[in-house]
Image (cartoon, rainbow, N blue to C red; front, top):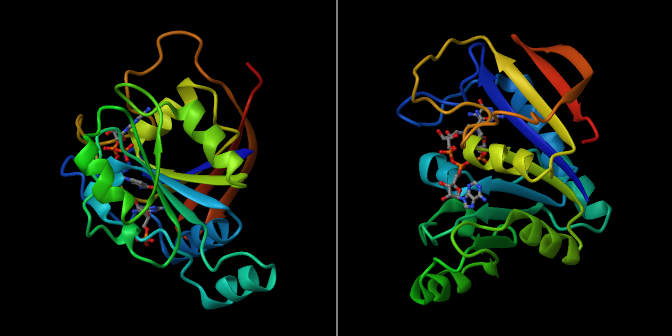
Length: 221
Ligand SMILES: NC(=O)C1=CN([C@@H]2O[C@H](COP(=O)(O)OP(=O)(O)OC[C@H]3O[C@@H](n4cnc5c(N)ncnc54)[C@H](O)[C@@H]3O)[C@@H](O)[C@H]2O)C=CC1
Ligand SMILES: Nc1nc(O)c(N)c(N[C@@H]2O[C@H](COP(=O)(O)O)[C@@H](O)[C@H]2O)n1
């Protein structure tokens, strides 16, 4: 399995504002790059915070990329995966439509009723008591043949993936905006590290539109 985290942050490191609404940090070129990465992935993963804030669809947008996937014998869109401890994904969320297979990953804390409702719209994976156990969940995804994994956010999920050592690559678009705000989400939120910080090796640095794309590989721990 290969896990790439892809996100866009402002020049001051924010994924969104303190209102947690979707903000276009990427320009057209970066959204097109993100679409190509989706098209090269078996699954696109987000946390439920992102579903509640942005209601993303997580499908490939460019028709020629969809056609290329079909030519390769792949489904039109990668699978969509929502990490959602308590089953808060709204039943009318865009990720639950029938455009692609969707996995909702819950912990034992999700009620049976919520899990039953979600199982009518998605494949359910349950792992973990309080929060989703990411190692077990990603192992289950791998067992389903999902090897090329793209994670889009948000900051809570990205931190947890670094915490358990699941991130192979980090691609960050740094866009030309200053958002600010101590409560605005950053690339890696959660508890934060105080020691044994994951370290990264810089693999690429390029101009994309009005911003910069940084590509990092995680160093061996
Ligand atoms: N600029 C960008 O590239 C992107 C920005 N965003 C922004 O990020 C914000 C949402 O991010 P967050 O609030 O951090 O939510 P998130 O999308 O990271 O989801 C976090 C939630 O996932 C659930 N969860 C279950 N198990 C977990 C585990 N083991 N580790 C972590 N979370 C787990 C919890 O309910 C937790 O509250 C929104 O403002 C959205 O607009 C989201 C994606 C991309
Ligand atoms: N890469 C990137 N740049 C931005 O500026 C963004 N606001 C986001 N947000 C994420 O993009 C996804 C939108 O998905 P759909 O277009 O609905 O398929 C979703 O993951 C947002 O959170 N990303």
